[in-house]
Structure formats: structure tokens, C-alpha cells
Image (cartoon, rainbow, N blue to C red; front, side):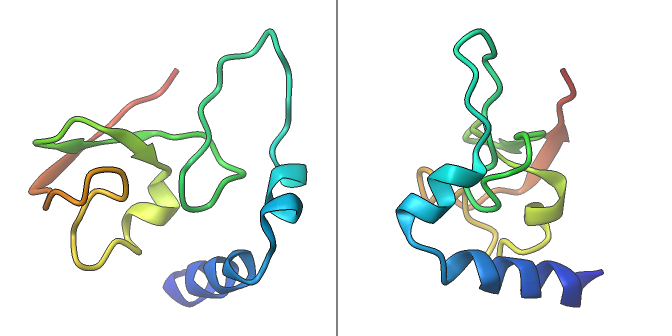
Length: 83
């Protein structure tokens, strides 16, 4: 699973911003926030202590060192949040 996640992340890193934007479903009536790393999955993880809901469960394991991708704060725990 980790190898597959790293492969997918590597593929996404090679895409341009325009290509990434086209992967994100757009619907004005929907307030779904997408993972800041994987971009095509919904954010489901809130990091502790900063509280940012920034990544999906797949990308959580890729955060090394354990820092929030939004504020760069080290996190010590996380909460799974489902809509």
C-alpha cells in the first residue's frame, strides 16, 4: 500500500497546476474540501495540535517528518473526520 501511495504521489508531483485543477471536481453547490497533497480525495484528517483539516487518510502516512502541510507545525496526533 505504501509503495502504491508513493507512486501516486510521484505521478501527481509531475503534473502541472492546470492538469491538477482539471482533476478536481467543481460544483458550486458542494463545499467539499480536497486533500492538499492528493488533490482528488476529500480531506478526512485533522492534525493535532494545529487543528488543520488538510489531508486524506492515504496521504497522512506520507507526511514525514510529521509536519502539517499548511502551517509546518509538527503534529503529535490526528483525528479522523467524516462528513
